[in-house]
Length: 197
Image (cartoon, rainbow, N blue to C red; front, top):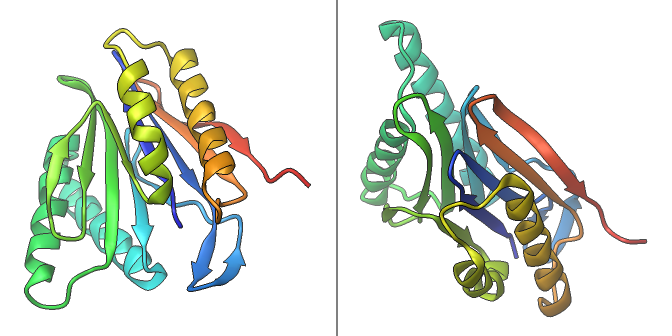
């Protein structure tokens, strides 16, 4: 029932995700941030089984930080995405992680980038990306409305429209969402959308 979306603009990437932690049909909490910062200009958006999601994200974070400490240099968003894909592929033959993810980042040389990955280690660089049941309703709308010169305000509006669509059409829609942006200034939370009581 999780929902993650990402949009790449000219000089930013904006991502949105639900904040629900569930176990089968039980809601555990509604304030879990699944948009995990990797460093100051990269973040990982994860969905899937809670144990796999947390373990895998901590593993990727620890290894990217270790690389930065050993080499006195941070990995690019593309390098983090390829490393993550390789780890998913390796785990697929041993004990797969049941997690899908988006990796969003901004680099000095290449600007913004957005990568989509699934638990089978498929990876694509995307302009718009999503995962979860909610994305079935939203991807076509974003595909129609996306253009290369999208502003941050337009992207936030698109994310809000997508969240409204999920709430209207998905029977088991998550109650709360968070929207974050990554650009030259780093990662920041743009908006939190809470359940209407």
